[in-house]
Length: 85
Image (cartoon, rainbow, N blue to C red; front, side):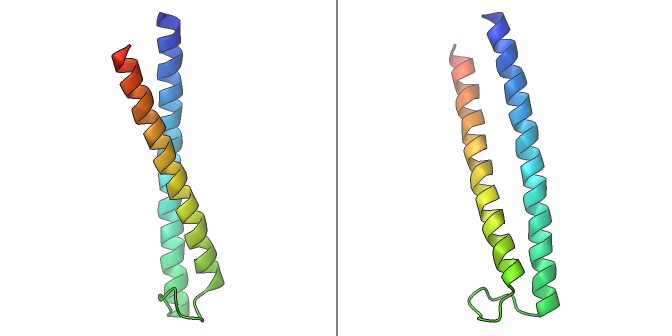
């Protein structure tokens, strides 16, 4: 049983590292979106002249944030299960 808990700890640590890296990438995307909006002087996503690059980055960032939320949920569930065992 001890061996399994060590594996679980390693997996959790790797997931935490992955979440931190994905959060960093989401922050970089946010900065890229802001820069593109400044460059084009259009920040209204409903404006027909809104940058296609910024729109695509927003979609990718949204997907990334959804992935982060899912991984954080899995981490919380795993931590709760390991404490209960």
